[in-house]
Image 1: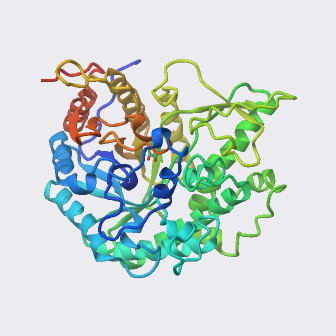
Image 2: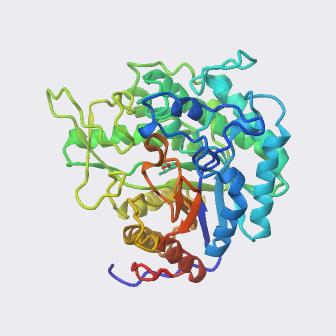
Length: 485
Ligand code: FCB
């Protein structure tokens, strides 16, 4: 560190984050129907170790204990997501009271502890009925590649807005639509596990449309003071060399990772180079008149999720196998539709248990980029954190110095960006709890609170203590682990 980290202001928002399928469990309770993640995780070979979210952290039954843990940490805010198939088990129609009751109770518990709820409507768990109907029911199916799914999302957004708008004032439409589109329908390492390049592009567009329609639907029912955000996971794409080929590889990935969503959502357009790069696959005729304008809604903030940067190059001439170490599982198909010849390289240096390189400069770069790209739009870090292979000591305590060092260096980057005038208002640590890490099941632990998945016992790690100190003082203590009793 070159100089002392600048302090955070008193009103900086300190939060923790989770997502419905990763923590709730209670998969078949109170009328909930399967989501695409239930189907996917129950399909042999899809998730490491055959793990599923059936029970996860049992947050559905233990949310009071979890809110008490957050209160003990002294955090200001909790970012969670709503399970769509709890609220609309058939993916359409009026919301189900029992499903909404859980979120009402959770929100009331948060408010009673002075913790502000940040609600995300969609964190990847599309009702199965909207992908391929189980019940032969009313839904057309087809998932995000179909336009109808965007209309269904708007209806769902409105239903949740009507039900919870009196007590939730911070709303996020989508979490990381890149993953939904390109991991769900491109590489297939996420649900629903399809490997159809054109479907991935169609999904991306319909997610943009869903976002815009969702913002409109929310605004039609929420009080004026409500704030609406979207959370993206912009890639920090670095060319391996300054050769024209490598720089062009980086441009292609930037288009497919970043501009495909930020273009419509923040600027009301798809860039010409993005459209041209995949013209051999599609004529984009699924984009209808007015769609990009619909996607381009005024927002109250941009959520940025950041973990690690990417280093890319043009695949060497004649290569048959392209290295796909892109940090999102080892699918046989590439998520980088139309850019399959771009190679991804593992940056040297430290890595987390995900194999992701530790590089806080990427976070600083993103904050600078989006503050320039969307002047006046407040920024929030809606996810940042690290998985490590935490092991208990003889007394059952968890010392996680690597995670503390990771958090320290990334928060230092946030503080420095702020001191350079960038309007970053909050930070949500991923994650409050160890949880179901998608394709990796329970094998990767991101929590600052350890979860024993046999007993459901929660044990705050040293990083939880450290983060509590950050939230209390607005300053970064030394990245040394605090003592645990
Ligand atoms: C993000 C997801 C989140 C979690 C972290 C590690 O891509 O939004 O649910 O899995 O990665």
